[in-house]
Length: 112
Image 1 (cartoon, one colour):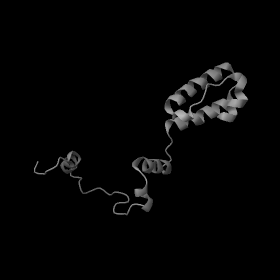
Image 2 (cartoon, helix red, strand yellow; image 1 turned 180 degrees about the horizontal axis):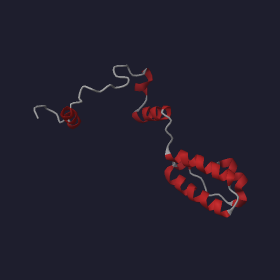
Image 3 (tube, one colour; image 1 turned 180 degrees about the vertical axis):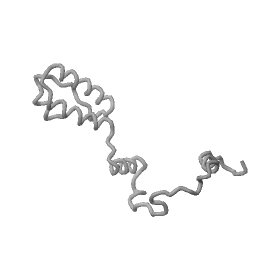
C-alpha cells in the first residue's frame, strides 16, 4: 500500500474494476438548509419516515389494535396479551400498556 490511509472498500472496488462506475443519486447536490440544524438521529428519523419505514413496535401496535377490535374469547385475549408483552419490550417506556381482560374490552378498544 503506497497510500497513507487504509481504504479497504476502495481497495476492493479497485480490484473489481468498478471504482469509477458508480452513479450516486443526488451526487453534487447541496444539502437542504435545515439539514445542519438537526442532529444525526433527527436526520435519520426524517429520512426513514419519508421512506415509509415503521419501527417494529409501531407495527406491533397496529396488529394489536386490529386484534383487540376482533377479540371475542379468552384464547383471543391470551394471544393479544402475548403481543402486548412483545410490544412493551420493544417500545419506549412511556408507550407501554397493560395487558387486556375480556371484561374490559370496550376500554381496551379506546386505548388501542
